[in-house]
Image (cartoon, rainbow, N blue to C red; front, side, top):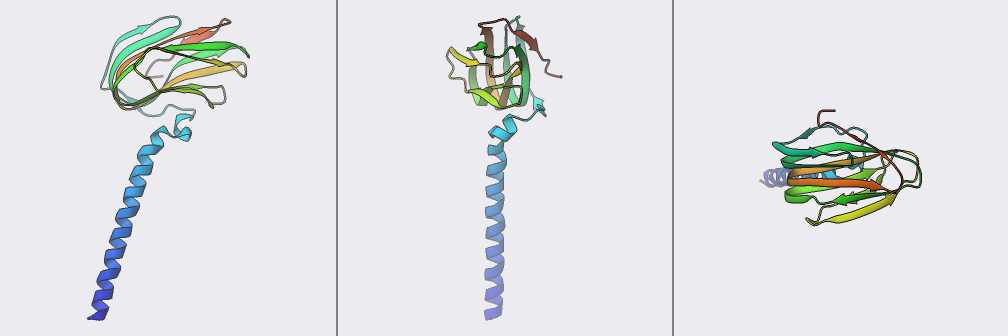
Length: 165
């Protein structure tokens, strides 16, 4: 009888440990989607929209409405000389989900991370090296209106990347 009780207790402990590890891993996997390692990878990887409409692209900006965006998209490249002041005018409005806008330097290090506040804001940075700086959006089940414009003290070359690039 005692042997049977010990066996039952051992199985209960094993089941509790397995459930605990599963909960721990599921929380870490979902939080890793916005970790610095995930945000700064060279490749965008998987990205999807349920809806992407009203796309307006200008020489210095981009805006569009979207729903249920998941993934990463490096949608603009800014080629700039060293010590150039670049300003991003952000008028993005997020209605659902998690969303951020990143500026990455030529070495894929985060220069700035913008979490839209649903109001117009300006963010500036000085380019530390000559090269290609990326504007990348990252979302998890996010919906809203993306709207940014880029300006700079000295001329920059801005390239827009298609969603399927």
